[in-house]
Structures are given as structure tokens and as C-alpha cells.
Image 1 (tube, helix red, strand yellow):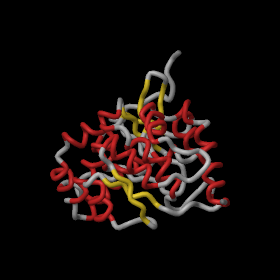
Image 2 (tube, one colour; image 1 turned 120 degrees about the vertical axis):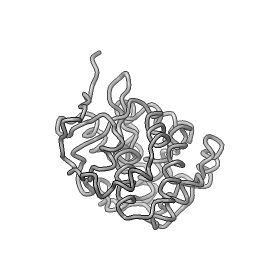
Image 3 (cartoon, one colour; image 1 turned 45 degrees about the vertical axis):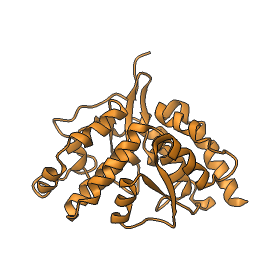
Image 4 (cartoon, one colour; image 1 turned 180 degrees about the vertical axis):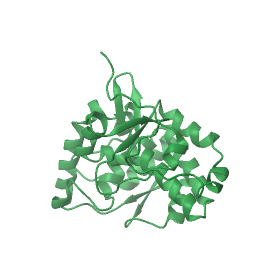
Length: 253
């Protein structure tokens, strides 16, 4: 009962922020999944809905899993969801993802066909990456898109990343705060930019639309990028480059 109450608290807190801060694709996915605001969802039921929408299945896992297993699941259109819930003293910060982060943050976007196709393509690329430098590049890509990605809309910047949308503080910070830099998405810039795991991000990368994400992976020569991994410079999370294209957080009314 207490875990259901924690879910209810988190869900209701985040739901109030979604209209002004979440990508339209996320809002649509949340509606299509029919998430219960009162109780922790049943993974099997969500999996059936998602499979009908985009062919993705949901599998329960006890926590973080090995990279090779993770990539293999994504490549086969299976998304791992952690099955434990955070405690009340962890409402605002977690060391690693829990069920609320994985379910509320990730699954709505997987109801969008193009995003789901990107996730599968990402898994396929990861499944053939072996060198640690290549795996580090792919971790950065996942971090700055799937976890902390922003997208431009006619109404201003909106978040689609699960790390943003499952956090009440970062939801507002990522889309509206004056502190972080928001830069137009560039695949090589993302692959070479380190990230922060214990604080809000210093930099967010902004897509023109969700299709750009899939196209960038489809068109990229990852084998060549991986081969150059040691030669390409690694940028600090707060690095500002002359080639960066800043994006305003709002649009004129």
C-alpha cells in the first residue's frame, strides 16, 4: 500500500507539469498507455498495449543489467523496466532508476513509432560495439537523448527524456531555467560530450523533431566514428564550442 501511495504522489506531481514541459509525443504516449494514477501499473498489461502500438515489449528486471544484455533487448524491441519502487526519502533523488523512472519516464515515448524505431536501431548499434571507447560514446548518446533530451515545438522547448520527465525539479530546470546551455543536436558533439550523473545537466541537446533522432542514427557511420573514438576530443559537460548553435528556451507568442 505504501508503494502505491508513493507512485500516486510521484505521478500526480509530474502529471501537473507535463502540459507545459513535456513533448507532445510523450503526452500522447501517456494517454495511449492508459497509466493508472492511483496504483502501480501491471507490466504485463502495459506490455500488451505497447506491443500493439509499436511492437515493443516490456520486461521486468531487478535493476541495472549488463550492457550486452541491455543492447540485445533493445535490438529485439524489448525494454527493461526495473521492478522496485523508491522509498519516501528518495522522492527527489535516486542513485539508480526505479520503476517510476522507467515506466513513467520511458514507456510513453516508446508508444511513438519513430522513437521506438530509434531505440531498436540504437540497440543494434550497441550490440556490435565492443571497444570501451565506443561503448562510452553510446552511453553519451543515450544520456543526452533518451534520458535528457529536449525537442523544439511551436510552443517552445519540451522534454522527451526520461531523466527529465521523471524528476519534478529537472523538468522545470531543463526547459526553463537560465543556467544550462541548450544546443542544437549534433551527433558527433553528443558522442564526445561527457555528462553529470549526480546533478542537473550543464548542457542539453535540442532536436528539431523526433524524426531527426532516428535519421541521425540511420545515416551515421558508427563504425567510422568508433574507429576515431581515441582521436576525437572529449568535451566537459559545461564545454562551450564555437560551432555550438544555442537554442532559446521559449518562443515569441
